[in-house]
Length: 200
Image 1 (cartoon, rainbow, N blue to C red):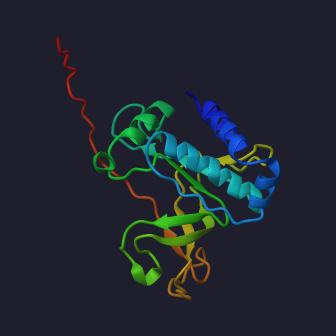
Image 2: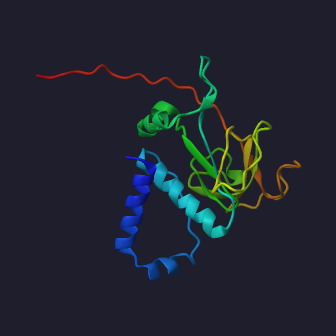
Image 3: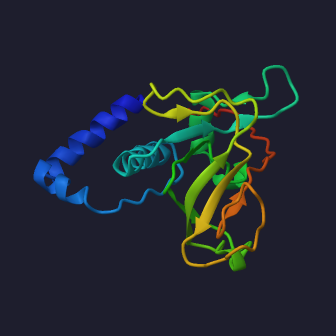
């Protein structure tokens, strides 16, 4: 099943549940997208995020997790096949690796740890995307395309916590007042497959 097949199914379900008039009323609300795990859930999350960006009238940007292993063919964005496999695995095996990530100004992110509560980074907290710091190798954006797909992992996603006013706690020309950077990290893991067993 392709992404297009899933989107067709979603549109069919929507048409059965809500009339066009009801959907028009929903557009007046502020949607919120949460990207979850498993093969289907990230696709649904990206679908919602694209709709949210479209409603806000801002540029949608996405990128894939990258493989930085030390072998030929490494340091490339993960293929769709690998992403599907990783998305289906238990998160304890992959260090909770997110295979697809996205950004747009106004995007809502959910924080899932209690690492920095003083910055609003606590379990089930929320923060809002403000800007991206891109890799210097990243090509210029092509506005003719419906959305921007990055070739390199961004250096940081700048976010503003929703529930905590942190003021100018971080002084940097790239970080606006009241914001802090979320920096991508490398996750190392090895996945092994169990031998296939045939029972008579």
